[in-house]
Image (tube, rainbow over all chains, first blue to last red; front, side):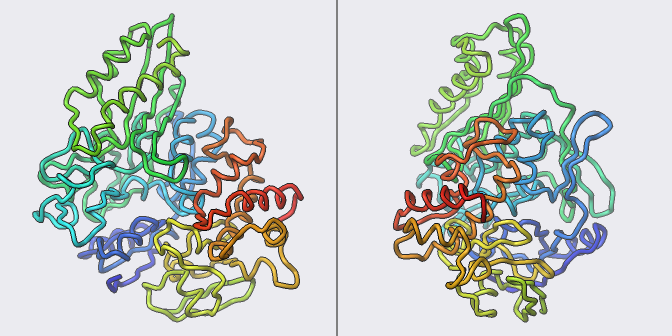
Length: 328
Length: 169
């Protein structure tokens, strides 16, 4: 690990000021950052420890939603009684991720910012445009079992590893940030993560030095909520494919639906066209296949991950069948 | 830099480079070699310790981030003369072969039972709202962050089930 200056922030203003310095990084749970620093994939020169900041509470908002402090751990959030009662798919997604030890450390803000688990990003002997812009992508033409089938570019085919963010995307979450200036604003999660394009080293729209302070969930929308994760072993593995679903039926037809997909792209994936195709229709296998056709119209495998295309289709069919009471 | 840690009830002052992981601080600076270094990347669980009541991977956190924290290692759970119930259950059920993962397994299992007592659900729980029975599937899911390359898993599950059933940790 490269040497760094350790700065423990006592308040948010100090934290933002310190993080505005060159090559500075915030550290919260540290479960991903320290892993990457040991491998020298990430080499911050200053670590701004934000763990003492007051961002650890979960509060009901005036709009009837939930404001989740950025430092709320994945464990605490998964076990929170309001999350369990009103946003169960978020609890399910958190419990499907990592291990008990990691969930006790990993935070809400940090989870959103975790880096890809692409093998080539982790291996500093390999070309990686995300780690070293302009160096190339060793994943293309390499081992691609974990890689993207949607939204990839000729520069990067990495996937976003989070389960939590997939659930939050289906719940229309917003990310509350404080800019370096101290100005607070909210960014819809669907606009927060970016596609790789020609700049795969940029993964979010978060400005340099800005601090994630909370995640907001809107008032509970109800419906049947499911988080289905398909992985290579039964526990403690990243998703090959995951689906977060929220479905409301009225008079035998799909009245509301939100679908978010993990393990398929550089960001948690949501496609409004897929949802439009389902709304107002009676659930059937043919309908679910139409939805999958729309979702996967531009899907492209890299070889090892070709299986993800039929896997997404089958998982979507299974999730929608379960969410609509077996009608498919 | 100086960091004060309360380890197994005793206050210790650590002088170390900020890069020092909590695991390296325990093993190399403070002489507590019970916690083991397996992967050093949070994948194997051999380094599991209990910080402020919660199990974490001590390899994936910096010692300097824990100024003032209370840390329990396997040495703090019991002694050879007076084993903790979980330690005794591992002996009774032969919950190990080589023993390298055992301190992490025991710290993890000890804190895991506390999570169950607080009603935390798991991926294996049919009902998220608590009151789950600690089935073997629950134990396996909740312990998936602790690998045993000797594959002593059946006996580890037996040991944890036994310790849980006695209602004491």
